[in-house]
Image (cartoon, rainbow, N blue to C red):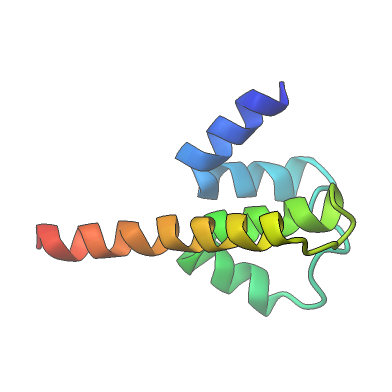
Length: 88
C-alpha cells in the first residue's frame, strides 16, 4: 500500500496532497503556518510531499539521502514548468 501511495503522489501530487490534508492527519504539525504549504501546493507539490515524509517518517532528520531526494523532487517539479514553457 505505501508503494501505491508513493506512485500516486509522484504522478498526481496535488490530488494526493489534498487527500492527505483533508482525509488523514499526515500534515498535522509539519508546517508552522499556512503560507508555506499553500505555496508548495501551487509551485512545488512533490517537494512539499517529500518534506512531509522526512518530517513524519524520518523524524526531521535531514541525512544526505534525504537532501538528495529533496533536490530530485524540486528538479522534477521545476522540470514540469520548463516543459510547459517549451511547449508554448
